[in-house]
Image 1 (cartoon, one colour):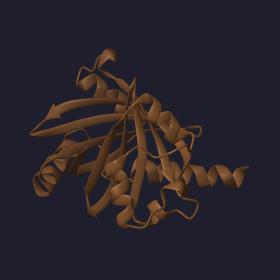
Image 2: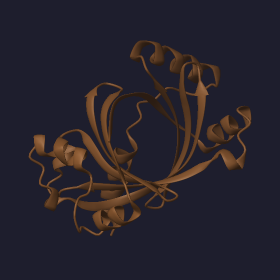
Image 3: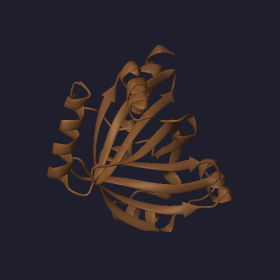
Length: 197
């Protein structure tokens, strides 16, 4: 189990901006790693109502369950348990909950584990690069017939990180825009998809 405070800044990109950044940073295909997030909530959106997100992330044969709780703008408290492939499959099938530290955090908010269900999955091709005392991330995500691109910057300091990210966006001619978390973008797409069907 790990618990950490994540400080991150993010901005959506166009496909052209994303591809240009891959060129500018000389990213090879073998540096791009695929991960899939499987999102959980209760039918009454107990997790979303807490401004939080609950997911199982799969990277090849590695699985982890993470609860992200918003603590301030650009800051989230992350509680993570590593899972075996079998535990992850059971959780995705609704046959138990095998993330003990995450379960403890959910209990604080009276979220009943047996009410949790998977409401969708989002796959991301990700590149991570050390950059100015932090981590620069280029993401291409696809879900529900949507494709989107974003840049993230993870830092240990909100003020310094914000300044570094602003300079980065200016340097590469990227217009700063308010960018929802992936789970929020997924939820918007899911609601639009339900209205159409």
